[in-house]
Length: 624
Image (cartoon, rainbow, N blue to C red; front, side, top):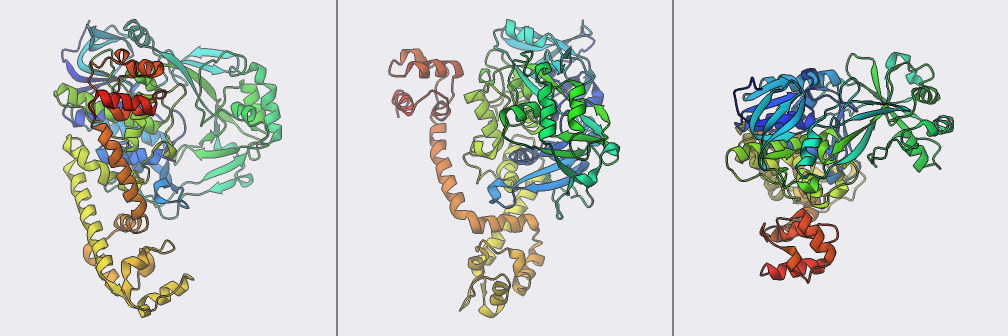
């Protein structure tokens, strides 16, 4: 049965972070798009912590924004606190993070999607997929509707056969208070897909009125704030503080008492959870020698008293949660809004995908988000955007849009998933990016907005801003290289900083390149101030120039290494290449290459089990 007469270009299943970015991207590229979700009130729901960004994740949000996505804009509109993490380290490590008002975040996302041309909405549960041979043809819903589409993007999050655990209690669900989704996994497995199970968890939410903050350490936001979006969103002028507390030996002892009733330890949960965001019971088991662990007390909004107890993720029985948390200083009289829980769900190993996030087995079917084995809003949103772009391009008979590892963290994320797969929830870190000096949060617009504009996603407004930033940066660098300063002008500044003085006039860029100095330190030099005013130089230009002056050697070295790697990216492997006939390859290499089907020699070199000698053999076969 179908009440829908339209055959959509793109149907997006799921309205989480991946689904929301997917729908926005495909629609903004001109594709007629239908977003189907089980509850329209929960679009882009922050199911876990009320924050965006963080180490490496902040870079991803800025990349999404630079390409024309919505996550950065929504975060800026709904932020209650902003921090730039890792400022004591080099700029490659700087990572923006913002606490958001959770209810405002979902509302802002829905409003932006409703204001996006080409997006339709439908509230229902998808319980099956329609196929035309080895091509996707549409979806089946719980109400029995058949809705046709040229492409389908599955962004089901934790809902596919989701199972919630609290102590010895288990019940179906994709999130607290919401049911699970059935039927999609079964249809895909029948088509030959390999599936698996993963686990994630969430901490209790508590009543902030019942906490004693005087026993905790206040964690305010940055004094000077910035934004995620490169558009003209406004930085915060007021902020809400978070607080830091700690567990102790007594807390750990109570939790250990409940291990025999914990689904993690009694065998009821057998799937793999996120290594880098373990539950509190996992932490005290794995790090038994530690007497305390940090607990971040995070408000969920401007006006709500609901508190997210970050660091206390748990699936322990509710009575154990209650006893243990009351032994944390400041939590003695705590009142629970809801208890923490673990959730198991289906995922599909991402080696079954192409770099476009289209599946290898079924044409025009795309996966994005936790279905691919990732964890985190940011990783999901990035995949959603890329799946939305590539689904739209597929309907337009255009080549897929694929980012290289040297172009974006998003490129690293997708290449890691497709090439290496994952057997535990994948989370992005700066250490995963070999070209992180190039892939900084400050230059995502310079790297990606021209590419986003070229495919029809980033707006002309964004491109004009990038061109102006590039031009002003070049002009300021030229000014510093050509302008001399006398010792009378510069020595007072150097003396105040406790730095060695100069004996003769020097070019300003030589002084500005000193690591202990910033261009702001030279505000009394009239010629520089006049240039700032004339050229309307803002903080983003100053930041670009300072990074160029201080890190140009490292940046050029990384560019050279990236260029060498990209030569191998241009050595294509034919889709029909038969690895089993190349007896010079190791058995493991033949097996892995046949399964993953890399498209280039560079991708082949990153597959676990493929050795340098195997790559040499392939290069000979490729005529190189």
